[in-house]
Image (tube, rainbow, N blue to C red; front, side):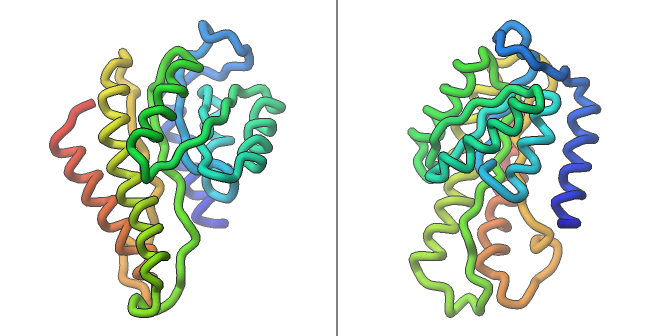
Length: 204
């Protein structure tokens, strides 16, 4: 809970510093900021989506939990925000491209992308993690992160303005080595490498 609160506070600071505009109308002409969020059906992703939706129109991406995502969207619209949902499989490049294009088409723009998705992980020695579990984690977080960067940057480059961004939600596990947390920390280290390489090579 403390980590969730901290991240939401940091997002609050980021959003305010970007001078975003709060919206309640469904007219595309009033959308001054649109954010695509992958993994907003519950927990930390939901908290992030609800905070961002105070200042931007959001597209909530889900893989399988459509009902929970619809509930998050309803809570946002009931509070006066703008929300739209769409299915996406981050491990599939074509699915990510379709999702981002759908988000852009729905709001008439796409300014930022947030990757907050992640499968359930095994808290155990790395040698006890099943092959299937590790494959799913890597496909979701590492391949998913690559797909977001590869498909997202060309789209964000088309949008005018200076507030374009891609945000990965990672973990404090990157700051230290925790026992039995390899299934979480190792893929996130790879994601951090993606972020660093992208920041070095690309100016959106």
